[in-house]
Amino acid sequence: MSATSSRLTRIGVFYDGNYFLHVSNYYNYSHERRSRISISGLHAFIRRQVAEEEGVNERLCQIVDAHYFRGRLNAHEANQRGNQLFYDRLFDDILMSEGVVTHYLPVKTYQGYRQEKGIDVWLALEAFELAQYKKFDVVVLITSDGDYVPLIRKLNTLGSRIMVLSWDFEFLNEQGEKQVTRTSQDLLEEVSYPVGMHGVIDDRSRRNDMVIQNLFVKQQTQPRPAFATAANGNSYATGFANGHSYDDYAPIDEPNYNVDPMVDDDPEGRKISTVRSLKTGYGFINFPPNNLFFHYTSLIDTDFNELQVDDEVEFTVSQNAEGKDIAVDVRLVRS
Image 1 (tube, rainbow, N blue to C red):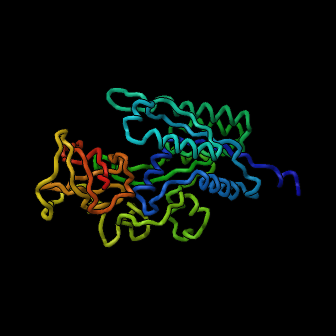
Image 2 (image 1 turned 60 degrees about the horizontal axis):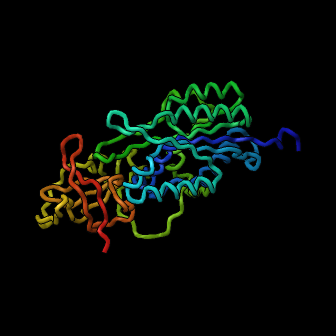
């Protein structure tokens, strides 16, 4: 075997953590997969994809460094959000078990909004410094942000090839508004190996590919709420099953004629009613005269995938930006 053919291809992986969490939530709550992205499965996919792009043996493609960057709530704020601290620690354990180094900065409140400040700069500085020191052959960025274009140009001067893993999709946010996630075209044009992960995952010709299957955390078989799927297998892409369009599932005020007009209250303004329907990442609660929209991010101490139609829930009535009533701080009433 020649020295060239036996040479190790060194891979460095850098996660835009907030983006990765956003993507993982989408697949767990709003996509037909109903499962989170697996870190170990993603790393296996990266090794194979790099081997294909570089034309080398997969065994000689190794991730020698991986880093995860994210702004997150401080301990006091996280403690106010049910089990948030536990889930943060659980995810840290997963990252550590896969050899991923974590980098966190506290989320700052600016003009009434929580914002990540400085985390993208930190990622860029670390990626460039480590690429110089560890001489990565391929740097993999998990992001969709065009702000990383200058980093890519700098990495190219070091001789590193750049692969970007990105996802494009649409979903409903906690206010019931349609949101679109798209990858910067400037970013895609700068990299050596752009990989549209949404297309890879939804490609029906690869549905039996174990590397693709292993991109998702294995779930125990259990009943799941019904949710709509596009006729071509893609959620949100071109339409839903049974001829429905996206707008058929938008959070409009649906008249509710089939429930008791009395909804239980408590002195603190909390309401108790039942789940009327469950869609992809959101649902409706029986609440006369119209059903109340709720989003999976509004759940407290409850996983959206645990919910079933007719489950009893408690919640607070709030309003979205359009002045429509919605349910927030939704909690499953456990018997």
